[in-house]
Length: 157
Image 1 (cartoon, helix red, strand yellow):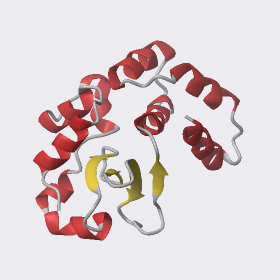
Image 2 (cartoon, one colour):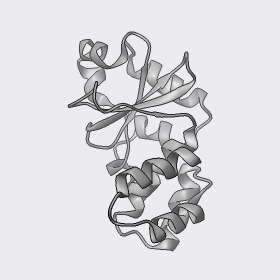
Image 3 (cartoon, helix red, strand yellow):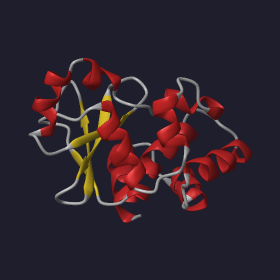
């Protein structure tokens, strides 16, 4: 089981943008980013619930702002595992880089109708390096098969 402090230390060890560790220290983030990510508080309030998700190895880093999807660090495989807390066995997505995680977050933010200027500020704030490529992908991707196309795009980063 990981404590809040252990999760924060793991997150900081990755060299992520300051806004991510800041989410552990403040409920309110700039540009309302707290609605897109934050610490998975429910795991820290009831640590015994982690075992179903972590198998004693994964470290919970962040949730999607609603504790719907949690992103874990796998320190053995050196990657990230995302899973829906309602269906942890059926919803695992493995991300091999932090930029892939950021692409997932950034697409969610872009879908919320932020303008390009605001998205540029957010991309810089979270340390996302592929904003232009992501916006081009979003503009050119088909409506049908969106989930598959999105997953393939993220995996390509």
